Image (cartoon, rainbow over all chains, first blue to last red):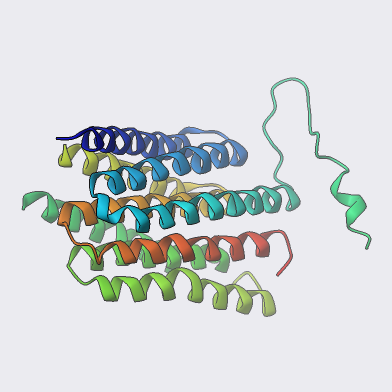
Length: 114
Length: 82
Length: 82
């Protein structure tokens, strides 16, 4: 049991717990945007922790797991952004408490005319 | 190993639920999402049953290619089924 | 330790699949599918570590490269592009 093994098990444990919390956030949150927040950011952290932890546990696998982690870190924000933009454009409103705040209103219509 | 039996049984139940969801929808986009979920679960199942090449093909074709072709087809025809 | 990891991954897959099954709008289901593919990518790497096979990581590599293409296509269809 070297230092890398302890570090790898710690990272896999934290990553798996964050994957579970992200999925629980998808199930419990009330709104599309809240679900997107929980289901993309927490899941990205959990996947990066799990994959790099496995790469530390098996040091000869490290470069391939690093490639997977880089692809996840690039591709997950792209799909998250496209989903949020599409959800806003088809007219799903965010749930707000008392102040009806929508900072993105009217921005998108100026670009539509070209 | 005992946990592998429970894992396979749970994945098969999830596969059947996703397949029934995919074929009972009137909104065809939801049917495409159901078919993609079927492909994901089937890929995990192939992987656990020690066939990584089949799982790799299923992942590449089922998640990316089939979804793109179905969405382009829905875009060119219509979204809701009577 | 192995059982703990597998139970956590299985619970995550069950919660994401439940949201995909009963989400009200189509966007909820696409969000659930997106996070389901990410959880699957991490879970396949973990299963490759449990099986001690190096070649099984390739399946997860294909998932990491290709899984966002289907979600991106669905999202672009939702906003009216494509």
